[in-house]
Amino acid sequence: MMAAKDKLFIFDTTLRDGEQSPGASMTTEEKVRIAKALERMRVDIIEAGFAIASQGDFESVRAVAEAVKDSRICSLARARAEDIDRAAEALKPANASRIHTFIATSPIHMKYKLRLEPDAVVENAVRAVKYARNLAEDVEFSCEDAGRSEIDFLCRIIEAAIDAGASTINIPDTVGYAIPGQFGDTIGQLLARIPNADKAVFSVHCHNDLGLAVANSLSAVLQGARQVECTINGLGERAGNASLEELVMAVKTRADLFPVETNIWTPGIVPASRLVSGVTGFPVQPNKAIVGANAFAHESGIHQDGVLKHRETYEIMRAEDVGWNANKMVLGKHSGRAAFRARLEELGINAGSDNSLNQLFVRFKALADKKHEIFDEDLHALVSDAQPQAEEVYGLVSLEVTSKTGVVPEAQLTLLHLGAEKTVSATGSGPVDATFRAIEALANSGSTLELYSVNAITSGTDSQGEVTVRLSKAGRIINGHGADTDIVIASAKAYLNALNLLNSGIERAHPQTAGV
Image (tube, rainbow, N blue to C red; front, side, top):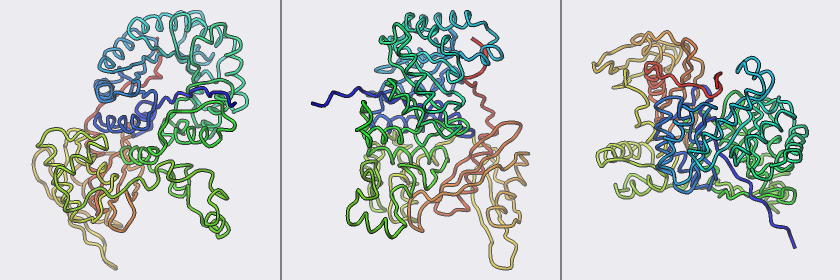
């Protein structure tokens, strides 16, 4: 008789660590949509943000806590009373909540960032956990930069944190320094050496700087970790985090090796991947495992022949099992308002008031006139495009572009600038370049264009193009997004969106800033 498997908790931090990717900021409405997609996938814990980072982050955590009923909602907090208070306040509406507090434990962080002796770090950790435990029944404690921490000190501080009331202990490889065998061994040692280790769930949070985040996480699971912290598409700071889809499918596909199983509804993976990609403007590379466009494509004739004869010859999992082909056509130009609202609700999109729904419906009808088949991805893009992400200093009224062989391309735009219409024009090396130059003739933003990216939202020549424009200025990096069946119009929308975000001047604290 096969032994029962342990549960592996999936802790998704797309909305917190994923949002720390440069330019990946999300609106509250977008965070709620992603959270609802994670809830449908049956993710155990959703880290909704870092509540003290800004008023916007606080409101986003609260909105997710109000909207999600089946997953536990978590907020990050440094080992400070004010951080923990803010997290607890934001989490009040949640059915189930968790406060996640942390402090750095590596010699380099304690010396140069915290400027504290090890004894003081332990005291701060215990104080923070006890304080959080008085405000929430579920408290997670993380040893920041555990991958470069001394094992004896980790044993000491973790034992104290568990005694103080932490029910989950997280061992993060904060800088992506660990190697699978070594990292797994560290987890095994901690579980063996800490006297009260059985009173907490041990978790890992691995970064991908060496491309080993998933491998390190799986090695830790084999050594006894029972929670993995991850993000959709591996989104996150620098090279990103461990990818949820890869972790979940590795455990499911290699059930012969892993003594654990997850609760994840895997057909929700690809839709969630596309949603996160569309919202953040971070495209998924075609050869990305599980969710890349080529993940189940076979170019080789030998492979094609084998798959046709027997799928398992070259496929270790079924495309349908992770949600490919789940983006069914949902609506068309003859669809009514009721069907439109119903599909938005199925996708976890709250259309708001009747007036807001009517405005979205008008946009939908305009899109349906241009594009015969409307897919779920189109609806997500339409809703994101309709949401103001910042005070609109600039708005697009009209655009006319001349581009033909032998003639220098020219763009003429009518823009809304602080409520007044202004017409500008410019030439460029192409229609998009001319459009951007025309916008800058009015804006004179002094920013630098770091990235221009175009991706088709769905297949077909009538697909909407989703454009990402990354601007940098004075150390700030902003991503602007725009979608339209006309790429030049989408480009103008994206550039103007980025300028509006630059003008908003919103500042957010970072969780890894110094201080306790």
